[in-house]
Amino acid sequence: VQVVESGGGLVQPGGSLRLSCAASGIIFSINTMGWYRQAPGKEREFVAGISWSDGTTNYANSVRGRFTMSRDNAKNTVYLQMNSLKPDDTAVYYCYVNVRYTYWGQGTQVTVSS
Image (cartoon, rainbow, N blue to C red; front, side, top):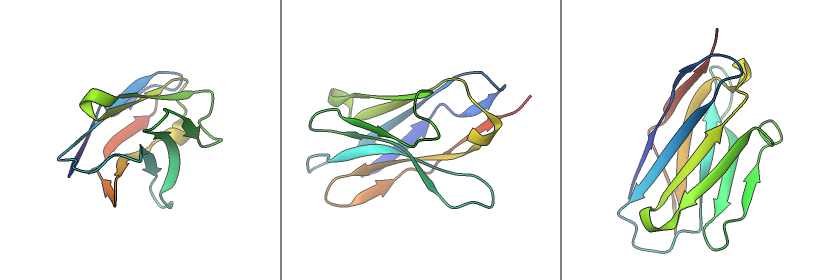
């Protein structure tokens, strides 16, 4: 299984970014896909997740209302639309896919700074 993220970068406070994550080599049915992030000196924290069976989404309180997760079932791909970005959102964002096990991507850097 391969998990590949893309779409990170540098953005000013208040700006937007869209992350993508594609999973390949999937044999078993996907249970969930989602995102965690890790800022320097901090533990990795949950950001958002989506249930593959019914599309139900779940968000961390810190991003609810600003971030929106969506999926493309046919492509085993999820997206994270991040709006109203704050400096506190600066982190490496990691995508995961849960099938029988959980697989992680290599991470993509998001930097929010003026």
